[in-house]
Image (cartoon, rainbow, N blue to C red; front, top):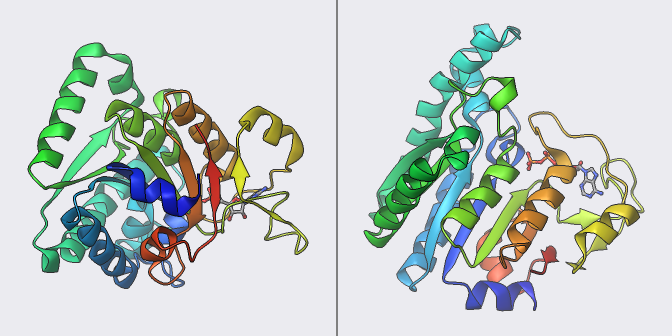
Amino acid sequence: MTIQELIASARKIVFKFGSNTLAGNEGKINAAFLEEFAGQAAELCTGGKQIVIVSSGAQVAGLSTLDKWARKKDLHYRQALCAVGQVQLMEAWQRAFEPHSRHIAQILLTQDDFGDSIRTLNMRNTLFTLVDEGIIPIINENDTVSVEEIKIGDNDTLAAQSAILWSADLLVLFSDIDGLYTKNPKEFPDAELVEAVSNIDSIRANVSIGAVSNFGTGGIATKLTAAQRASSYGIPTILAHGGKPRCLEALAAGRQKGTVFLA
Ligand code: ADP
């Protein structure tokens, strides 16, 4: 199936944004980008689709609020920074959806939550209730309680887990690249875009995975794992550039390329 067909046929879609997509050049949350996406997402909802957003960006938002902490690497400072930034991040999302009369809801999760059946049930019920009421849930990892050992660690995995939890029809990972390439396009200009992947294990053996960028935590490896996880539950994944003009509309209209991981 093409990207256009996947979006057209999915009713429940999880969108994930990496920090690099949400942050502008000056290292702040890119409010204009959030507003543009919210407009397109609201239109999808009006057309009968349901959406859940997994949003990184708490640390970026925190840094632009409290830049005096920029060089503090101590874990507790980083967690504190995310606690500050999470508020800014949600405020930016709220402002973005306000003109479209859409409420948002914050959901902060940890790895432990996914391993406990009662918590999982509660999370699932909350997600279903919010979405049924037309509210847009915005999920992030709960950095305050997620010390290294129990961290989900990257929002690609969190997005895949959320898609599975909510029984989504489609997972869309927005990053700062057009999709999966044969090698890191930022280092190798001759890297080629892989438009469709049906076997993630074999593609792993055939692409080279480069370093992660500035604010990114997972890199392409976690996107492959996330796609594989979603795929094992029958959920296809699209990896696409979130920084292109009206990216969601462009994907839905078949004007923007990306990588499709078929389930
Ligand atoms: P995000 O913050 O959007 O989750 P990351 O920075 O974690 O993004 O990961 C995306 C980055 O992975 C790209 O910007 C790219 O530089 C790098 N990368 C490494 N190898 C590849 C590859 N084979 N194909 C595409 N991107 C790659």
